Image (cartoon, rainbow, N blue to C red; front, side):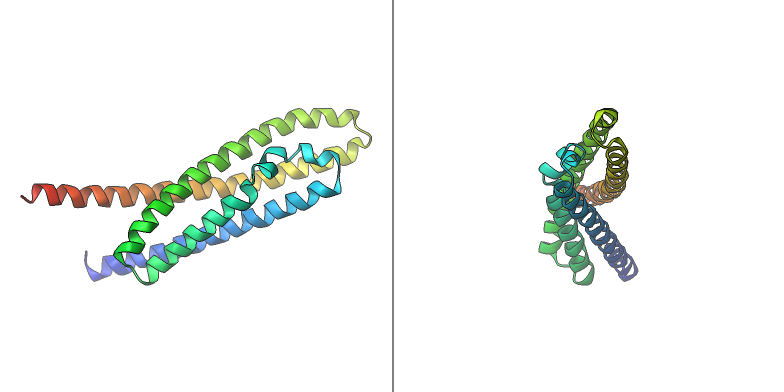
Length: 174
């Protein structure tokens, strides 16, 4: 690789790491907000049951923030060990993001069923308000999780392709 290509790759890693950290922080803040609302209203626990009790609102963003931090470290000082760790970290982050998409999608699908029961609750207006607000917050979390999934899968494929090209050149050099 030429020095220009290396510099361009370092800039991309820095930008990607910053985006990962920001989206992880946004998911974490939304998760903390959903968790704090859970204790305020008794019936609100139904709306964010899977998301809150699976722990995704904590371990998902922590994983994304650490992957983004590692990307920034690799972008600043590329070393062979950091690059190798970064590949496995991206792969792990892709799996976590996929699990997050599944958890959030299942929770959003079940929220529609629970919203129908709001008409029979003590305070139907508050129930509908909290349920739709919860759906909105979880939809934002789902959008950022999908962003993380796309970034981590693309970087995993890019690093895997580079790894396979390296081994192909090594094998056919003989």
